[in-house]
Length: 566
Image 1 (tube, rainbow, N blue to C red):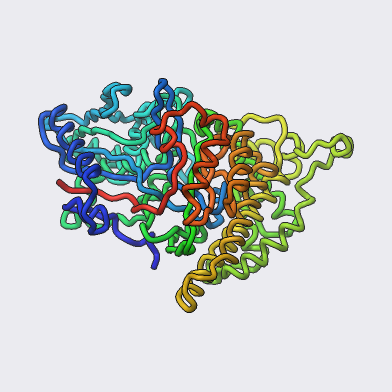
Image 2: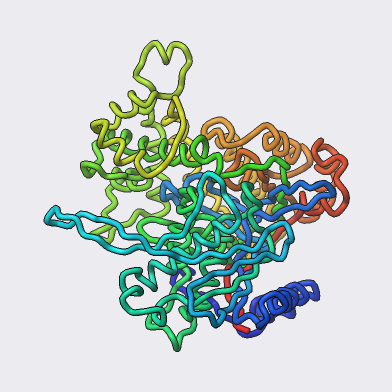
C-alpha cells in the first residue's frame, strides 16, 4: 500500500474524519465551535474545514509563556530526509483546523483570522510582479509571477498562510494566464479562521502543519479538491511536494518528513517514508506492549529564525559532503550537480534509476555500512588544524575539496540559502546521516519482525524486540548530540532521566536544539514512568497539573490531513 498515490480525503461527516468512529464530545464542540465562530466573524457559514495534524502544539502556562510540544514524532530518522534517505515518523492526534469560505467581493483579497486573541486579523492580496528570465537564445524574456510579502527575518504566523497560498497560485493560476483571462478566471477571495497549534510571532509551532492546512484550505475553497470540478485528482504525494516547496518560502529548507507525516499518517501505524527515487509511504506496524511518550524540554527552538546557524547550515554541510565523498569514491557527477548523500550511496552501489534498478533495503543497508568506513576524506587536510583538535573545515578548504571554482561553488551551494559559520563539520554530519539512515532500516525491520512474531506466536515474548528498538533510539540520541550537534543540555538530561525511569530508549524528536524527546516505554509502566519524569526533571517543578499533562504524555499515531465539506 503506497499512501503517496491516494486521493486527499474530502469528508462530508465528522464521523468519517475520525475513521468512522463517533467523535468525542470535545471534538464535536471544537469543530462545531469553529464553524459557529467563523459565521459570527464573517456573517456567513464556512464551506470547508481543512485539518492537518500538528508538529508542535503550544502549551499554555499560567504565565504568558508558550512552549512547543512535538506532535509529529520522528520515531527513527532525524535530519536525514533532506539527504533523501527514508524516515519513520508518526503523527498524533492534536491538529490545526482552518475554516474557510469565499466572500462576494470582486477582488482576490484574503482575510485570515485566528481564534486566539493574541493574533490580529490580517488582510492581504496576491500581487503580480514582472520578472526577466533568460531564453535559450540568450535573450531576456519578461513574464509575470505572483508575489506575497513574507518577511523571513521577522516570522509571523500569517506568513505560513501566505506560504501555503503560493503553491496553489503557481500551480492552478499562473500569473500571466490569470491576468490575461480576467478576474473570473483567477483565485477567489477567501476568508479563513484558524484554530489549534499556530506559530506565535517569531516562535514556531508547526510550520509544516500550518502550511499543509493552509494549502488544503486554498485548494478546497477554489474548487480544486472536488472530483466533478477538477480534471486531475491531487494526490497526497503531490500535496506533500507542494507543501515542501511552500515552506521554503519562509526560509526553512526542510526535507519533507514533517509534511509527509502530516499528510499521509495512518491511525494504525507509523509510516516508512522514502524520498528517492520518488516519494512513497507505507505503513509500519508498531510493536505490541509499548507506547511512545513525548516529553517537552521546555526549551524553545525556533527552526526558521536560527536556520542559518543550525538547520540550513546542516543542509549545506551534508550537500557539500556528498560531492566531496562522491569524488573520492569515483562516483559520476554532473559539472555543477547538487548531489545528495542518498544519490551518492546509490550510484556507488550500482543503482540505475533510469534502468529501473533500485537498491533493496538490504542492499542499501550494506552500502551504508561500507561507505560509513570511507569518510576520512571529509576531515580537514590542514595538518596543524588537525593536530590542534579542529574537526571542521574552513570555507576555503571546503571549496577546494569540492573541486569547484569559487563562483561555481557559490552558485551551487550558497546562492539559494543563507548560512553562517566559520567551520563546516562535513565528517561528523555525514557519519550521522549514514548511520541514522541505517538505523531507520533496522528499526523498520524489527517492527516488521515483531508483527510477524506476534501473529504466529502471540504477544507474550516481545521483550527482545523492545530492547533492540530502544537501543537504536539511544544510539540515535548519542549521534544527534555528538555528531549532528542538534541536541541541547536539557534534551540530554531528559533522555538520561527517561532511561533511568525505565524507558527502553529515548531520543530527541523534531529538528532539535530544544523541543521534545520521545521514549519507548512498556505499556504497563507508563504511569510510573511519567510520574518519575515529572518528579525529577527540574523545569517541570512548579508547573500546574494541566500544564504538566501537556508537557509529557503518552501518544499514539493519528490520522493525516483531510478536508470536511460543510
